[in-house]
Length: 153
Image (cartoon, rainbow, N blue to C red; front, side):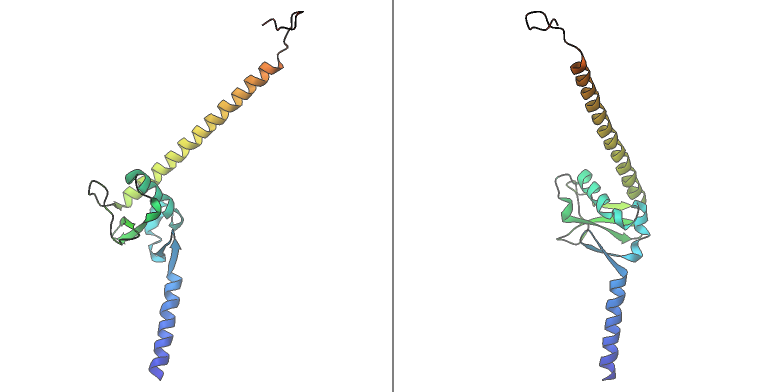
């Protein structure tokens, strides 16, 4: 009887430890001990963004939701397919494995792309403002009419 009680206590402790050491992100359970590994991309909250960036740039014909990014240990990250839990290979047969430097590079590329998109949006807004100002200026110009109801322009 004592053994059954102890095994229930141990099982409850194991479940509690698991719940306290797992964080779900992007429909995948990540161990909190891997937080340091994911600091190269800015932490666990950046996993989904980086994964989507990798998929869109390396596997353009694939849906990012079909994959997850994982830390395999020894400083290596991998893209796994949700249906087949092993490293995914691209069309050229190259495994989707990345080291720390690759992850830092992806994060930098994402920042550059984000800045470029922000600049493009700003330029588009500035162009729209210029067009509006031009139109308002044209509308504000007095139009002189001839005696026959026509503009002299």
